[in-house]
Length: 191
Image (cartoon, rainbow, N blue to C red; front, side, top):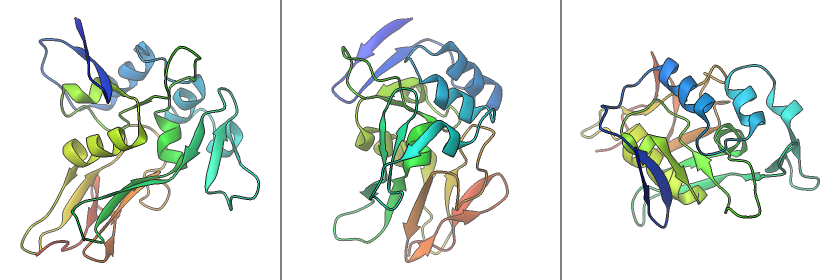
């Protein structure tokens, strides 16, 4: 395995083909090459609830949270899907909590992919929230065309399998992400 670095992420590269499975994702968190916070691991494994592992920052209407272990700040961050459009995806405090890396003085903040492995980039450490959102857009969102549904993959964890509580979402063509079989959809999103 070689280590590849870019301004937005660090990735482990191998010659193997990426496989999308919960077992591999659980192994990815357990291998913990990017120092994922143990609270994030416990939450993703369904061993503890979010509000016991993180605390809402006072006077923010629960829009900002902090990890109780490493004090990582957790906010909602949005990414427009095209210039001038209202279409967007976002990751909220719960979503960023699932993949946050321990804060250490020698490293910038960091997050890991929270979805099933779809490409080698899913094994990356993302140094900004925007980089993780761009990864979500590029590998875990399939935009529908001609009135077809857009799909968003579910997170690869044992928590929050509902669109309203999963920690991320989409608003496309005025429609919000909702539950579907094995993934989330935004109905008849784009023309």
